[in-house]
Length: 289
Length: 317
Image 1: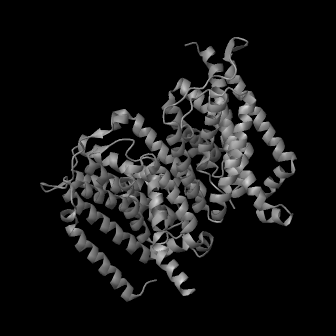
Image 2: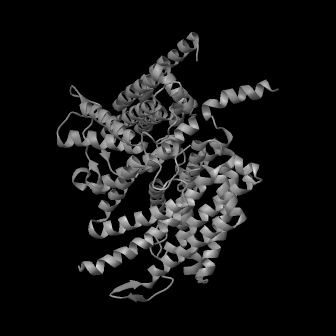
Image 3: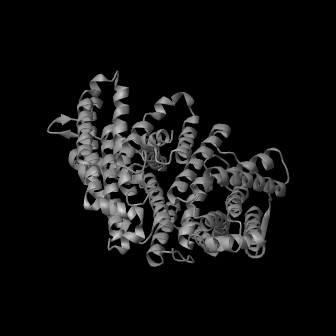
């Protein structure tokens, strides 16, 4: 194959999966940063998002923008409820809360399996056609994913920087007690942060549903990659999650194009271990207190 | 700390259990029950080894992967190189422990969450390798007709016979965990679990002890995996997955994490559960997850804490 035609293709694919990993990792990192909780059910919210997309967009043919809003509403409410019922009572114990989210993951995944079956369902593209950029030709649906993910990440960043709640969340992440002293209602922030974190995963699920197919098991890989990305970027660091997501996406895409998929996966894990050896807190993480 | 009489009582219990165990294969109605008993003993080995890691305040989310490494290693040694399984099992145990030391050295500086994430990634890497390194692992098809463990012409292949081997190893691991808990090591482990910073300021090399506990626990998991491979005579990437790691954690939580007895009780309760829940096909895993959450919420000390919970309730009357 012509290498000059492959390079932009691999780059674009890297951006697509990188944007998805970034979305996943930001949500995961947000939950960990504010609540000190490792959410092992994070991938299941991606899965729920992709199922919402399948039913609303592919089956009932509602507009795609509405699909995203429905997914945000469904997963946001579910996330806040799970925080309230399962995570809240265990928050003081890092390991117990982690094991509890593992239980949530098992229940959600097998619940989906029971209701929807194991067979993967294909989902139609949201936009079709080709985009010509110089000599390279891209599929418009891929570009749509990148643009949509960028918009969502941008909106999230604005929310965290400018809004009262966003600033309160950052304050809680920096120092919970100091935030409490400043009048931040920490108990109200927690379910909110958890809900936003899992909503980002759901949005990733909605956007990627046409790229990958929809099944109860689709959440596993994105979650695995989110773990790799946050270790790489630094747990709790949002810029680290974006940077790490894009880096891992690029390694995966170029690695898979030129070296084969398995080598690419191994390469990622190798990079992560190497970075941990040099910078244990990740690329942009703060040192653990 | 338990007193001298307590110790005698507990030792007596262990001996009584051994005597009862001697008759178990003969008393069970058919081979299927013997098989469940064997699996329970193997689970007990895995849960105990995970408990050793937990006793320094770490939790491995890739415990099944170490069992898998042991299983593949011992199986391949016997099939490719003709190493007697009885020796291969021990090599697998030591090699798995060595691998844990290497991984432990990499993640030496990582605590809590990072440790969990890296063990999780290690588990994924194992599954990936087992699936794709086909020359060695035969890919998704796995390795079939692995020889049974034989010592001096005596085969531990048949289920009732394997029971005694599994029980002996289980008992050895149990006594080892017990001895470990009562040794200087055990006290260092305890202090690290309770307050790692305080332990470190008291001059305990916490990182070293955590790697030691990780290596011992993973090594025993490798041994258990090797035993499993020679027992079911088959190993594939599906034999030891993340779901098994979750199951081992569930055993620890349900039984009780504070004492190693909890791991044993958890294994005894959780392992036969899928057989009891066979009528609820599909619901099975959901029940697993629900039990996990329910125990964490309502009985954080696990089943072994029931007596003390009851005592507290009774005292309040």
